[in-house]
Length: 219
Ligand SMILES: Cc1cc2nc3c(=O)[nH]c(=O)nc-3n(C[C@H](O)[C@H](O)[C@H](O)COP(=O)(O)O)c2cc1C
Image 1 (cartoon, rainbow, N blue to C red):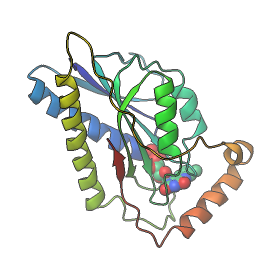
Image 2: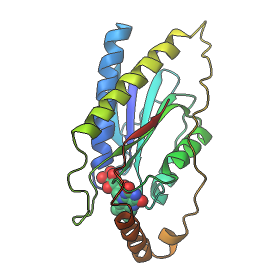
Image 3: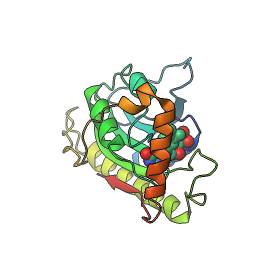
């Protein structure tokens, strides 16, 4: 039985936090009315010292969100993720990106989270405001991006209801693995030179200006 929805975010500029807070709240409200029981929810900033540790177990649904930095998850975020124990909790892995590309980041988050015992049942890449002032996509996220997020939320809620209904005497069916393409990236550039990383990322962003990237998800 699902008793709580926990949002965890690593969000230096606050964009990922906004996405996670919204999805955590909407999902908890929806599950609460469906399950006719009190489903609590709370969000935690992974960058802050947490006084009260979230209870992560099989009664929790966890939503983990991280930003994309040069097509990858930032190294400090990976370190923080490695301190967690998922204990089999049904989990949604999300990355936020600034319209260029999310590269290997979603695959990376999916892989590291599974390694830490989280059972990933859904994953998505959503647009957040680019932290950089001179970003070429000042008007994103727009209404379409927000609508896509709401649609994802409905789809994931539907999947969770199906999965919670398939519990028989405490046994939960193992969800099928998600088909996220990618490989584990090497964090070379950002480790040795933050400046080189910044230049590479900016060039990358300019090269991608002609393509309108959309949110994507996997269930
Ligand atoms: C150092 C750095 C690298 C970035 N690299 C990418 C990238 O490769 N692709 C992309 O679409 N956005 C990129 N962005 C934009 C961020 O992914 C986007 O702004 C993210 O949603 C910020 O999350 P936050 O507000 O939670 O920090 C980068 C931003 C920074 C600061």
